[in-house]
Image 1 (tube, rainbow, N blue to C red):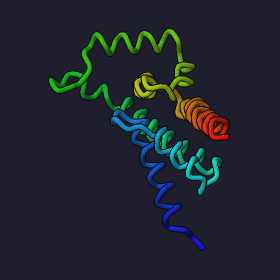
Image 2: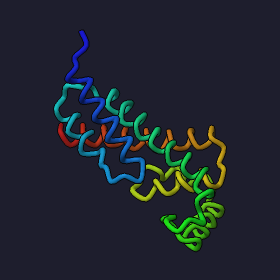
Image 3: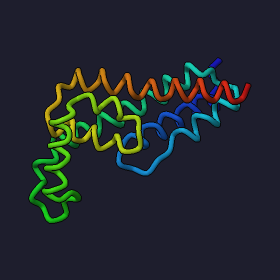
Amino acid sequence: MLDLSLLAQLATLFLAAFGAATVLPFQSELVFVGLQLAGKIDPVTLVVAASVGNILGAVVNYVLGRWVEHFRKRRWFPVSNLQLAKAQEWYGRWGVWTLLLSWAPFGDGFTVVAGMMRTPAWLFLVLVTIAKTGRYAALAWATGAASG
């Protein structure tokens, strides 16, 4: 039988992870750790739910990056031409490998710039999936090790 309470908890984790991968100020780690410590959902399921949400949030950033150039000359555009040029230069220098840092707090910017720089979608997905899933797997391991 399907436990709606557990499904709601997974949906909450998914949404927190999705929001955390966008420019929105969300934290998914607290939700993840809390659910793991509650012990009702196995860690693999938590890693999958959080990873899928976080990856899809990064995809939103990527798509925004692909279209951001259309709005560059608007007064309300949130990034200056200089900041944008520096980000593009940095990405051009270090390349797609920066996406392996997309799990970090500053990594959301890399996913936007990847879209702006027209990184192939398949490569974006591979690198972001490795980074995001690796982060939640490490968090699950650390939480399990700490809780004994």
